[in-house]
Amino acid sequence: MEQGHIQNSFQDLDGAYSHLIHLQEVNKELKKQTEHLDRSNTMASFQQPSMRMSMRQLINQEPSGVGDSSCHSFPIPFASSAAVTDSDAALASSPEQTPISICRLIALNKLEIPILLLGTIAAVSQGKLIQRIRSMCFEKVVHMEGCWFDEPEHSNGFINARLSADAATVHSLVGDALAEMISNAASKVVALVISFHMSWQLALILLALVPLLGINVYVQVKFMKGFSADAKVFFPLAVAAIGVSQSNSLGSDSTKTRRATSSMFAIIDRKSKIDPSDKSGMTLENVQGEIEFQHVSFKYPLRPDVQIFQDLSFPIPAGKGIIKMSLRTQFVPIALVRESGSGKSTVVSLLQRLYDPDSGLITLDGVEIRKFQVKWLTQQMGLVRQELVLFNDTIRANIAYGKQGNASGAEILDASKLANAHKFISGLHQVRPF
Image 1 (cartoon, rainbow, N blue to C red):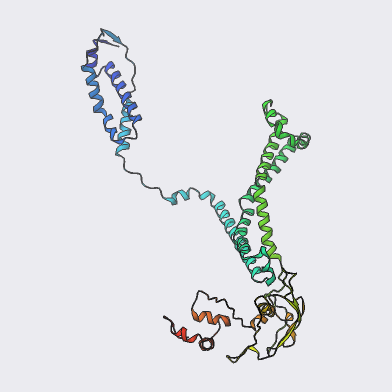
Image 2: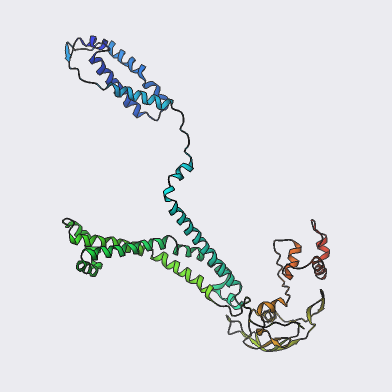
C-alpha cells in the first residue's frame, strides 16, 4: 500500500504508483511500435529515454482536483517490458542470416530417395515411349507408297501434327490421367470390400440404389444418428462415388487420348503396298537397261474417273537415256514431249514404283519390275528433278550423296565436270580441291 500526495508519488521513482505509470507508458509505446513496425527509422524513438522523458513531463504536471489518495500495490510484470526491449534491440543488432544450402534441403528428403528414384525411372520410361512411337511412325511414313500421300488426311501438315501433337497426347495416357484412373479404381475396390465386409446385404441394396444416392445424400446426412451400420456401409460407397465422378471428369481427355493413340497405331500397323524396306524380291547381276511399257493402263487412286494411261506401250532400248559406264556417261536422250498434265511425270513415277499400274507390265531387261527389290530397283536409277534441293552441307557432300556418300574425290570431280558445274564451283570462295 502507498499513501501520500500524488505529486510525491510521481517523484518517487521506486514507488508502486510510479512503476504503474511507467508500465502504462511502456504499453502505449509498444502499441505505437506495433502500428509502425514497417517504419524502421521510428524504432529508436520508442526506446527507454523517450519513456523517461514522457514520465518526467507527466510528473511535472500538477493534476487538478486530486487530493490525498491511497493506492493498493500489487505485483507488476517488469520483466516483460524489459524482455521486449531487449529482444527488439537484439533483432536490430543481429547480423544477416546466412543462406541455407540447397543440399541441406535435399538431405531432408533422404528417406524418400527410393520414391524419387522410382519417379525418375517412370519419367525416363515415358520419354522413351514417346520417342519410340515417333520413330516407328516416321519409319513407316517414309516407307509408304506414293498413293498413300495423295490422300488429304496424309498431307504434310497432318503427318507433322501426328508426329508432334498426337505423340505428345499419348503421354497423358501413361501419365497423370492413368495414375488418377488407377487411384480411383483402387478407391472403388477398397470401398466395395469395406462395405461388403460390414454388411453385404445392405451393400447390395445400396448398390442397387446407387443412382438415387446422389439425390438422397443430403437428406441422409441430415438425419444420420451416430455412426451406425448403415453409415459404415454408406460412407465407403460415397467415397467410391466421388472417385467415379473424378474419373468421369477425365472423359473428354480420355477420348482425345484414345483418338490420338488410335491414329498413331494406325500408321504403325499399316503395311505399305510398295515397301522399300522389304528385302524380298530378285536382283540382277548385270543390268543392261532395256525398259519396256507393255499395254499399261493407270488411274490415280484419288481420281478414279480420270484415265491417265490407256494401253500405253513403248520400248526404251538399252543405251537410250542415261547409262552409267565406267564413270562416263553417254547421253542418248529420249524425250517425252506433250502438253502439261498429259502424264510425262507419271511415266517416271511408275518406273520408280511410286505407283503400280492398274493393268499391263513394265519390264527391266525382260523382268517385270514388281519382282525386283524396291530398294535395289531405285538404286539402279538416277533422277534429276527440276526442283533444286541442296542439303545444308558442303558441295562435296551434296555431290557424294548420289553415291550414298561413298564417292571418291576423282568421282566427285568427274561428276561436277559432266554436270557442267565444275567451272562455277571452282570460282566460289572458300572452295577446297575435291
